[in-house]
Image (cartoon, rainbow, N blue to C red; front, top):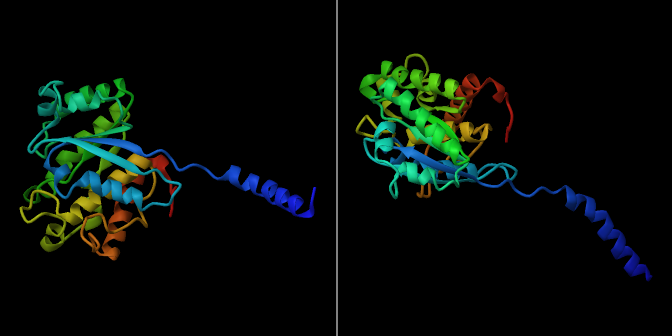
Length: 260
């Protein structure tokens, strides 16, 4: 063997262990959203995709789709049956790792518990895992409306042993104990009922933590098509920290993993 061939062989053999240690990127998480205008305002599924895309390469990406209707509750989604395009039919496609279930702000605890249980069983039947998304309430119902939304969903998540994305609680944490009216309204759309871009961004951070078990701290502040940040980076950091703090509070095993 010539000296050149020997050198080439040695280089190849030296590189093999390093190549073997390189891991393939994680498979993207496939997520279906079932809910109402709280989901489609500001394209929340796309926000979650873009947040995940900004994470380090060893973290999973997210591909998302939706079965949503304005003013829909889990009960109304269930009662639509399983015809083409319904939430039940989409779940039955069997291709989802997670199905995010979001109820209306005028939540009826008994109806919610019943239909969250029915949807969770259906999701499990087709190989996925349900996630409950407890959103913010309308501004006029602050703060009691937030508790009315959070409490039955926290109980259901514990009973059903599914993750809870406590987005409304993340809003409260971000605001602190005594927010001014202007501070509160900064997270809302001008209609004071739906999330504005900043409010949806905080939803997305909360969902990222619930879906991956990893911190959103350090991820992108730009999750819209415009060429500017969705929220200023300093505010984005505060929102990320609020979302992660809430996730760790309601999921004690989360610890402090996944720091960028």
